[in-house]
Every structure is written in structure tokens, then in C-alpha cells.
Amino acid sequence: MNKFLFFAILAVVSLCSANALAPDTHFPIEEETSFVLKADSTVFGEDSVYTLALDSIQEGHYSAPLHQARLTYLTDGSMKACSRSDKYVRAAFDGTISMADRHNKHKQTIVVNYDNGLQSVYRQLRQPQVHAGERVKAGQAIALADKRKKEFATVVSFYVGNELLKPNHIFNAATGKLQDEMLYCKLRRGKFISTTANYVGYAKATARMRQLMVTSLSPFQRPRNVSSMNLFDLSPLHWCYPLVNSYVTSPYNVERELTDSTTYNHTGVDIKTHINQDSIHAAFDGIVESATMHEGYGNCAILRHAMGLETLYGHMTCFFVKAGDRVKAGQVIGLTGATGHATGDHLHFEVLYHGQRQDPALFFNHKTHGLQPAKLLLGGPQLKSVAVKHGSLFPLYVDYKNHRWRNG
Image (cartoon, rainbow, N blue to C red; front, side, top):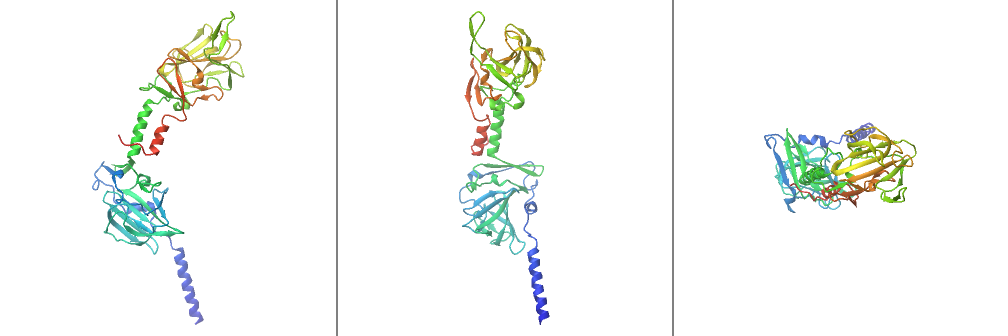
């Protein structure tokens, strides 16, 4: 009797151990494509476009996986729904159950083919309420959700053909409702590429804005219909402060006195470095208009840029460029000096707009040696500066995030 009891206990322990070590046999997301329709030409037509107007689907004709659910986008491309009040997993739209397969005591996978062309695969389910071939309505319970601590949870993936769609193209996690936009899917070489009307509109608006953006002041780049220039948009590769490790000794437009007691206003800024004959860098991409001796300026180089802008570099010791050379921003064009009307080694730097001298501080912060956070208004004889916080594309980005863009 004791021997029989020993073998009975051993059998029970072995069975429990086997169940404990049994693998979790619910399908991972990478295997779900074997359950859904193939995106081939016999189903959709080669190079066809599938569209779904999510913004036209009314309340009652769609449902989140769980009522009053908290939706989360998972990194594997699926969406998790958690609810404290609803334990029933629900069909997203009207459709037909194509598979309701039990894999073990606790795990269930249900695939629904919807009338609108989408498919969804539900995981983490218990006690299915439907069977293969059954018609379901949007919001109809198809299974019990998995119980996790004090809430119910399920995971759903959306497909068109056998291509996984991003869940944020379907549901808005913040509101739990459908996205207020159009879903676009393009079949190309047997695979669907999906996007949304918001993104299409944003991409088109971005392309239009890029045509108007000034990213470089090269005279060979001619932006169309430009009325302003946002300094945030200038690429770091296309601008450079003329002197590194320097400081301004005489600002723009300050009144100065000549030897004959006459006065004049300073037409640029005097920039000095801690060493003599320091390297002078081109402020922007441009063409060397002249590199020669000018009265008062001494050895002076003038660079021509886009939109009527020019920069002038005076009192140089020598030139490293000549007239007609193309230069890049940051390129060394010469060395500082004291030629012309100068009392010490420094750089006299000017900015001109259509021949009219402008304050270089409209472009550069002389303390940080960076660009000003400003937009320059073009068109008049003088540049006007308007303070801004972001580049030209930033408002488009904000509008896109707020779903204000439409295809058009």
C-alpha cells in the first residue's frame, strides 16, 4: 500500500512539473502572418491602392478591443488594451470570424476578416464566444480577456493583406477612438505600404515649405518666392562666425571721430582675437567678388551671397582667395591685420543687403558666436528682425501631431 501511494504521489508531481514547464503556445506576432490573407494580385490587384476613410465611420460601427480601455502601442506593432470594467474582447468592425483556435487551456487566438478589408488578430484571450465562419458585428463580444491582477487585458494586431499595420494608424490611444483621417495602403510588389492622410498632407506641406526655406546663403541656390529667412533653418555647415575666440571692440553704428575732428558712424563691427594674424573664416557660402586694397579698409575681401547679401572683411594682412573663387562657410579666406585706417590687428566685418549696410548683430550673437534666434524679413532697403523660437518646419510638425493636415 505504501509502495502504491509512493508511485501515485510521484506521478502527480511529475504531471504538475510537466504542466509548469510546458511552453506558452500562443502565437507570437511574427507568426501571425500565417493566419491572414496574402496580399497578392488575385485578392487586391497588382499595384492597387487600398483606402479606408476612418473619419467617416460613425460611433456604433466600430469598437475598441475593450470598453473604457487604456490603449498602448507595443514595439512589435500590436496594440494592448487594458480595462478594469470590461472583460469582453470585442470585434472592431463588422466582419467574419476566420479562425478561433484554442492552443491550450488558457490561450486563444481569434482572427477576424472585416467587411472593410482590414483583418485583426486577437491574442491573450480566454473562453471564446464565437467560432470560425460566424458573422460578428462591431462591438460584439468574441472572447473573454485575459485577467491580469485587477484588470482585463488583450492584444490585437491589424493587417491589410498579410502586412502588419501600425496601430496608431487605426486607433488613437489618447481618446480610444478611431483616428480622424484616411488610411492609405499601396500594394507594391506584393507588399502593402501604409500611410495616412495626415502624413501625406504633412509631407506635401513640408515639401512646399522646403522650397521656401533658406538653408544656405550660397548664390547658386535660388529659393523661390522668399520673403523672409529664418536663421534657425540655416544648416550649421553653411554658416560660421568670422573669428573664433574673439570679441567685439567697436560695435556697429557707434559714432567715431577722424583726425580732422569730423565724425562718422561705424559701418561694421571691429572684432579682435587674442593673437595677431589670426584666421578669418567666410561667414556663409559665397563667391569672392573682390580681394584687393580699398581706401580706408586696407586689404579687403568682399563675398557675395544669396538674396542680395554681401559680407566685407577689412584690414587683412593677406588673402588666401582671389576674385571669382567659390568659398564655403568656414573656409579661411585670409589673416587679420592692421592695413588701412587701423590702429591694431583686428577684423572689420560688415554685412550689406542690396548695397545697404546692416547691423551684423542681426545675424550673429557676438558673445556666443552663434546665429540669432530670429527671422529676417526681406524686401525693403533694411533687414528687419523678428524673434522666433523654432525653425520654419516646426509649426508644420506641431500641426501634424495635432492632426490638422489632410491630403491635398
